[in-house]
Each structure stands twice: as structure tokens, then as C-alpha cells.
Length: 272
Image 1 (cartoon, rainbow, N blue to C red):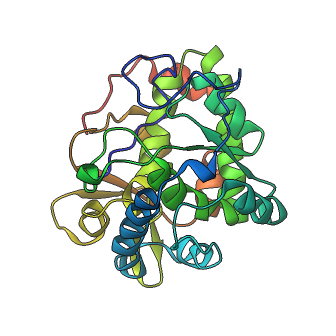
Image 2 (tube, rainbow, N blue to C red):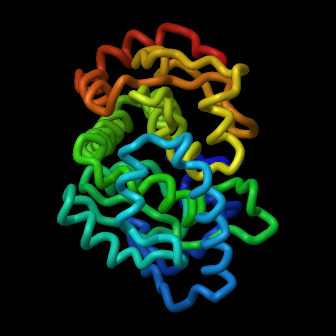
Image 3 (cartoon, one colour):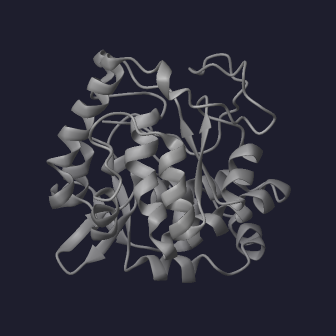
């Protein structure tokens, strides 16, 4: 299982991987594509090949359509080249970062249509499990859906909402929404339920589990329930939220969250 983490950790955390010494004030760094070794590219290809056997059956069609135009199976992609395509399609671009970054930097990037992608790659012994998101998780899981206009607009609005949530002391609630949608979300399609969350699409085990295993609950998306529900970070999820479409996700997250936060603050969090 690839475990990913919503924006809650600080980039100054000494336990985080990644070289933060060259990061700018917004935590952006140079990708330095030439520094990747052939072993790095080979490992990325192995990860890509494994997931490529799974995604036709378990990933949403929007993701499948987008990955086909990225030529990402030959090795670690050059962010600048992908950004040109992305900018032309939805106005987004990739910004290289050393790893997990503070909330304000993360939300600011999203609010300006810049998606932070980690530059380092996991080690071979971490092929099936990694504690922090690496370049494979961030690129393979997140970037393709940024080519979908509705999804891209939703993530842009999420970034703006994140900056607002910081002033309202509500980041913890908003991080739950990120977890249950952007990272571990499911969507209904004509072929059945499929994954769109990056934590699922980049996972060798949970991608099939989330769609076919009878054990987890698959609940129709409910904004307030998602904002209240804690999540699991060390095992497969026991609950997933299923949207009807990205249009529904955009529509139901459009209202002002402040009165929702105020109401939910008086209620206990729900267990996963």
C-alpha cells in the first residue's frame, strides 16, 4: 500500500525526507532531472508497469484518458515538459518540492493552479509501501486528473478554501475532505465504481481492494460526514465516499464552509 498524507505536516519537520535546504520561500525547488540515476528511472518504470496492469480495470476513465497523453512510462517525467501541456489544457502547472510542505505553502500553490510534486523517489525496498508521498505517487496519482477541467477547477477551489480554513482554525476538517476525495475518492461510472483518488491509483494493493473487496463501506458522498470522519493512515481504508461525478463534487463543495465548520465544531468526530 502506498500511504499518502494530506497537508498537515510542516516542511520543517526534521523527520521528513527530502532536501529542504535549497527550497525557496514557497518551498519550490528545481527538479534537477539530470540527477536521477538509471536505477531511479528503472524503478519508476517498474512502478508504472505494475499500476498500468491495474488501472484499466479500477481507475476512472478521465484518469485513463489523461495518462495516455503523458508518455510517463519510460522513466521519471520532466516536470517542465508536462507543465506546458497542462498549462495549455487547464491552466495548471507542476511545481517541484522537496517533500511534504506546510499548509500555507500547499494551499497557496493550489490556489494559484500549481500542483506540488515531490522530487525524490522511494527506494527499491519501499516498492510496495512508503510512508511519505514520493514522485511516483504525486505524479502518477495526481497529475493526470489535472487535465480534466472540472476536477482541475475543484482542486483550485480547494486551495482557496484551504487558505480560508487556516484563518477559521478548520484545516483538520478540510484535510479529511482531501483524504476522502483527492486521495481516496471513488466515483460512479457506467462500468461501475472506479477510483479517482491518488492514494488508490498509485497503490499496488488498495486499488483493487477499494473497488471489489466486500469489507469496506462505500458511502454516497456527503460533505459534512466527510468533514467529520477521521481516517486511517496505516492500513487500507474501511470507508470510502463515492461521488456521482466531478461535477457533483464541484457543486457540493461550492457553498461557504464557514457555517458548516461552526456547526460541525460542536459535534464529535466520526470514527473511520
